[in-house]
Image (cartoon, rainbow, N blue to C red; front, side, top):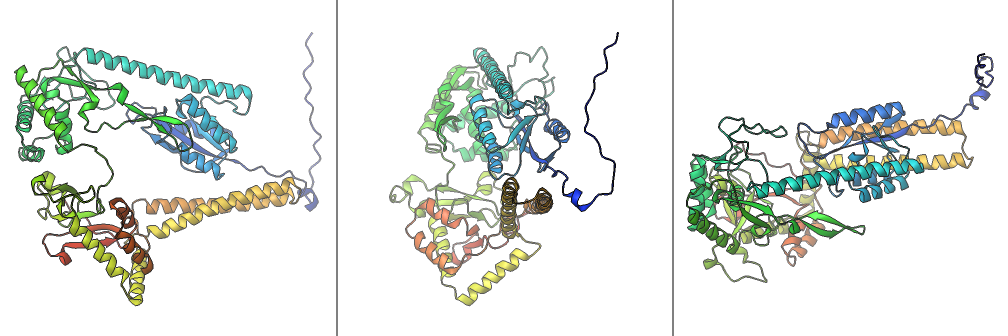
Amino acid sequence: MHSPAPIRLRLAVPAPSSPTPASADQHPPQQRRKRGIIYVRVSKDRPDMISPELQVEHARKLAEREDIEVVTDPVVDIGKSGRGFDDRSIADIIDMARRREFDVVILWIWSRFGRNLRESLQHLDTLTNYGIEVRAAREDFDGKTTIGKFAIAQMLNIAELESNQKSDMWKDTIERRRRAGLAHGARGRFGYFRCSVCPPPERGKPLLTCPRCKDGILRVDPVTGPILADLYRRYAAGDSLRSLVLGLRGQAVKHYTGSDIDAGALYQILDSGFGLGFVRYQIPELLHRTVEKPGGGTTLQRTSLHRDLTSYLYYKGAHRPVIDDAMECERLWDAYVERRLSSDDDKGHSFRAKYSVSGFLSCAGCRRPMHSMLRAKKVQREWIDGNPDPRDVLFRCTRHMKFKDCPGNGVYATLAGAERAVAEWLRDISEQEPELESAVGQQAVEVMSNPGSSDAEHGARRLRQIEAGLADISAREDRLTDAVLDGLVSADAARRKRADLESQRAGLRMEEAELKRDLQDRPTVLPRPNRDAFVRILDLWKVADHDDRRALLKPLIRTVEVARGRKQADKYTVYTMWEAPPEPVAS
């Protein structure tokens, strides 16, 4: 005997009738669609990576299935490790959440959010506190339930475990290569080649090997090997690095990558000691340092080992040196290390600018940057308060110094002359008559409004207005929701008002996207400060140190072009931030 079919209870459906105004007010209010953004991360940009397009496609399918409106382009982190958050876009997403610009973050899988369990959970808690829901398209759990939170924590824990296992695997691989006398990486080296039969390695693809080169030991190149040996001998004999670079360029010698060899690349070649039979590995204890985070707590930050020979351990390699005499190799390496450690080239190296005009000076011949150097010690004047005399600091055309191919045959300037030219420029502007100041201000307006020049300031000002407008719309929506809950506004009126606000938001977002596209490749043009501002800057200039002077110039000067000659009035040309930049010189 068959069991009776289940009975489904349904509400009675009234007969269709013509709608009346009274019945229209009784319709339930239409719920606003959730706003979502898509976050994509890949740890390394390579051909076999997990495609960002694949991640975006799965995230969009979830958004369509759940009726989530994706309100902006996907936030993409390419080449970013999941083990840290300092250099990723998660902070920007949290700022957007604070401004209530979206409701849902959509991932592909949970490991894309992070592979550090503790920090991942901290950032997820921050988003949740702002009312943001985080979803993963392939591992979709309800993060509002206890079981869902547990499942998410487990997925993040598994992601961290996988990351740690990969790290252990690489550590074992590196240790195995070290014991075998092989270099840290399998890339090429100047002065050596891998195999005359196998194709060269390609990024992101497996390395093809034959029985001759399967051991990974590089062979001395018959052409560049003797050149590398000669470089070590000449440097140990006292030749300057600049003469070595110019000699390589004169012989048209290229790096194994095909690029020109400048001073930095040559230091990397020689510092490795590979040509003299060594392989080097970084000292593990010096790889990271502990830094305090602004919001409290600590994190590990990778240490910059820029040209620091003392941060490495050197082992005997399995490859053959470019010089057959082992005693000569030892002697050359000892002489090289002694000269490198005793030189002032890289002591206390910092990427911070040393002088007030660093980064502002450019060569009038090639319109490329200029770099600083000190006169020889035997002719230097006495230092002033721990700094060299400004007359002993020279700025030279970088292109001319490296390759001797500047169209203007290179220029030079002293720090004293450049600072004097900038101070005179500041003094001239601060003493301008009001009528002339007004005329210059009008000229700046014309430059900014000229379609052929940059209107970045106008666009930036409009973008700030749009951002404020979007924040205001979100605040009005919140007030409207509170009014509906308090019974001050009817549901139908709130629905009409929300539709109007959504229309305003869509218009602002469309304008914002167009502005960002228009301003992406345009140089920044700022408004000209008034004369009083220049008077204050000139007063501060007289007492400020180099770093403070540079900070004063940054919003004023685009570049100071240096021409050949000794006449101060004709040597320096100041291009301001309220003028269009000079046209580049064709190479």
